[in-house]
Image (tube, rainbow, N blue to C red; front, side, top):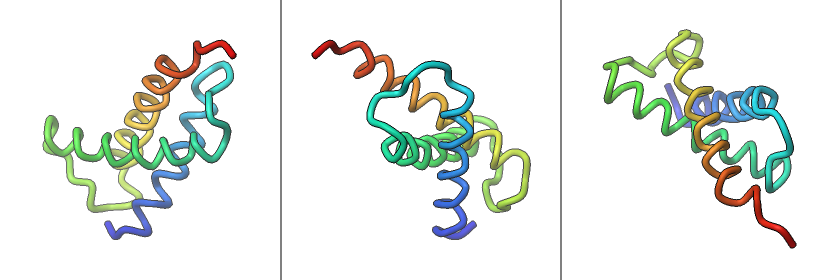
Length: 87
C-alpha cells in the first residue's frame, strides 16, 4: 500500500475511532485525525509484527481492523494523559 493510500486509511480510521470513543477528545477534530493516522501506522506495524498480517491491500479487512484498533488505542492513551487536565 502506498503512502497516500495509508494516509487516507489513517484519516478514515481516525474518524471511526473518534465516533467509537465516547466523550470529548482533547485537541479537537484535526488532532484526532492526526492521532488516527499515527494509530493506523501503529496498528499496521503491530498487526504485521504480532500476527504476521500483510498490510499491502487497501481493501483488506485486516488493514482496516488493525488501523482502527491502533487509532482507538492511540486516542485513548492521549485522552488518558491530556483529557483530565483542569484549566
